[in-house]
Amino acid sequence: MFSSVNTIWILIAAALVFFMQAGFAMVETGFIRAKNAGNIIMKNLMDFCLGIPIYWLLGFGIMFGGSGAFIGGFDLMVKGDYSSVLPSGVPLMAFLIFQTVLCAAAATIVSGAMAERTKFSAYCIYSIVISAVIYPVSGHWIWGGGWLSQIGFHDFAGAAAVHLVGGTAALIGAKILGPRIGKYDKNGVSKAIPGHSLTLGALGVFILWFCWFGFNGGSTLSATGDDVLVSMGNIFVTTNMSAAVASITVMCITWLRYKKPDVSMTLNGSLAGLVAITAGCDLVTPFSAAIIGIIAGFVVVFGIEFIDKKLKVDDPVGVIGVHGLCGAAGTVLAGLFAEEEGLFYGGGASLLIAQIIGVVAVAAWVAVTITITFLIIKHTIGLRVSK
Image (cartoon, rainbow, N blue to C red; front, side, top):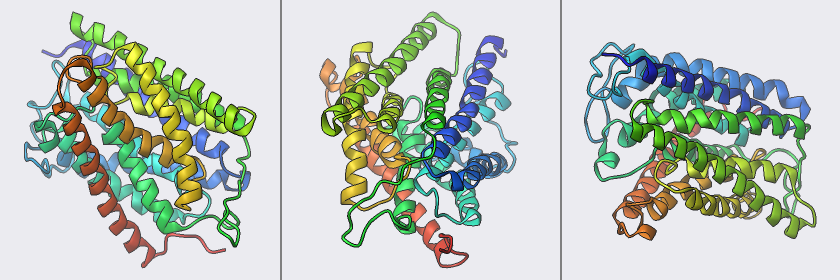
């Protein structure tokens, strides 16, 4: 029997995760120059629109269409039997739309790091590849019964499955693409290229924060039973706590380092806290969520500076630090702070080891496949726009 409560909750959560596209679009548009606003909006729109039919045609089957250790199966247009993976009382189409919008979130993360110099047609091709193959394969490892789930890896809502995938692809893409004209002087010193609207950027962050309650809370895939309801309340509190504390941490760090609080970095701090808590939001206490938020604040500030000044990778929006580094850090921290299984709570090192293996495996898979994808694009139709 289908459960109306469970189904309605998953559909509401899917709608919230869909609206994250608006948040990403506003953050990215606000943090770049006005002349490129139309370009970045089209990328955010089209990676979602391209990803929907592609994930339906190929991605969902690869992710959930079988119980193999490394890949699910091939099921064109989702016509197979998924009864073994469906949440209790939830019809297939409701589960499909929730998984579809998660896939779209992973794809759209990359556009911010490659903003202001990527050829639009090349970006469309990349979006198809990540939605069809790259995201579904690692997603199968984590959520589809693959080898990572079998060794005890825990990623409740996608710190690795969504954010680390997007952040790793962003790092590779921005590195292959090269920096914007004028970003580094002849001595390699980084120069700031301010975005045109902190107002839009802030609006995007508030939208994302709001939608994260669906992103994390919806991953219960249920809204019935006392245990689920207690867990859902905890997920909302830990998600909120990590974001708030990370924001405070970044504000304080930038205030001390730059003699005034940095607005754009503090906004990224909110997102850093949200990303970092995503893996273990169901397992940690509010106190642990606050500690994770503090760590995420340090990771995002020094991570973005390291990527920009040491690696010389031009990331206009801070995507790699927020989604890549904080996604990895948050996934590992779940192995330390999980209330019963975590190392700091007497659960031993088994979960922590599984988390580290998962982060390395997902990052390696995405790095190799996306490098091949971007190099093929670069040497065929071209990846970068002309001067």
